[in-house]
Amino acid sequence: MHTPSPSAVPRLSLAQVLICGAAIVTLSMGIRHGFGLWLQPITQAQGWSRETFSFALAIQNLSWGLFGIFAGMAADRFGAFKVLLVGAVLYALGLAGMALSDTRLMFALTAGVLIGAAQAGTTYAVIYGVIGRQIPAERRSWAMGVAAAAGSFGQFLMVPVEGQLIAQLGWQNALLVLGAAALIIMPLAFGLREPGFAGGAAPQREQTIAQALREAFKYRSFQLLMAGYFVCGFQVVFIGVHMPSYLKDNGLSPEVASYALALIGLFNVIGTYAAGALGQRLPKRHILAFIYFARSVAITIFLLAPLTPWSVYIFSAVMGVLWLSTVPPTNATVAQIFGVAHLSMLGGFVFFSHQIGSFMGVWLGGLLYDQTGSYTIVWLISIALGVFAGLVNLPVRETPIARGSAATAAA
Picture 1 (cartoon, helix red, strand yellow):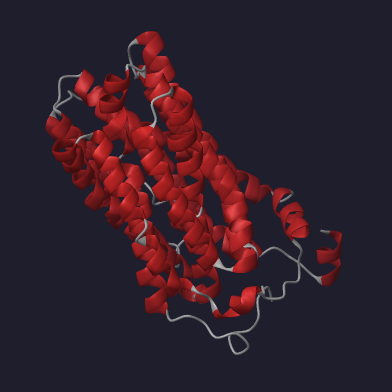
Picture 2 (cartoon, rainbow, N blue to C red):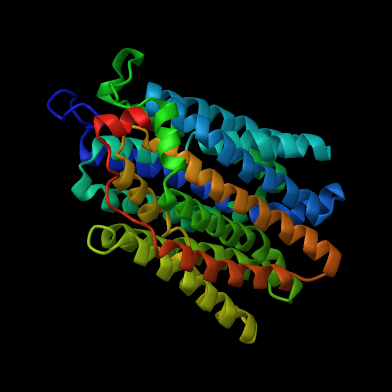
């Protein structure tokens, strides 16, 4: 209904989509998950406050969300291939700029705006658009879980590597090496050249972009999904960026932080795959509510228990299962409600809400730490927001939206 029939436009093979898409997400997400390891080296070398670093990464997350909308529109119109090529180049330039910046403004522009735009073009919204268009609905949630699990594996793989690069090469050279590695996305993008976009022509759709947006933003369940995703962004980016410093402030070694972030990535492979697979069998709103409630419980126990390396590792494993496991059911729900014709764009808008939450989480973490000398307030905000997100996901309606010719015209 939303795209040409499979007989009219041949699909890429399942293996090709998953291998190339998963490899791109592994690299792109793996690099970004380690940025918290640079907080103390950069702030100490440059004489900056933690808020300065946090604000740049907050801009990065906001930029990622904002540019993600337009990257999604471009991917829906021209195909993911061209968007991925541009994103890879921007990623390399942003990492190099992050290494060479000597002013707060330049650091915010490179580590913030440029890398955020690069992530918009190389991560979930674009890859999930390909999955939605190329993989049948009966396997879509599972396939999204596989791609999200790849991003988690990237965290497990890349965070220790980034820690070693910093230790062996210094923080600047480590960023330059990662910039070169980001260019590997370009050859992988050739595996995601979709047949329906040959010659730059987009498939015919029954809705314009404006009609699709009006329909989505008037729909209550879309609003609730955006609200829940805001919380997801707040929690994971606050923890990912500030937990290394939180642990060091409490007397634990940097190695504990590196292992903790790696464990989050490792166990998130399990969590995201499971969430995607369960999304084919269970109501996705129940999966999302459980994830958000469980996060609040895990954070509460972590704060109440004595802080030791083992308590950190257990918390990291539990949070890892819950980390990006919201991604497959959220995006699969959007596809299930609205179809796949504008999936990258609508996924980009939902993700923009996620990134506003990310901006608030990472920035408030640095701001409130500088003001109070503690992360306690932000931990408590994370707990309360988790309860809120669990509640707002319960009333989400997952059934396809009723859309006749008259409804489409009215939309």
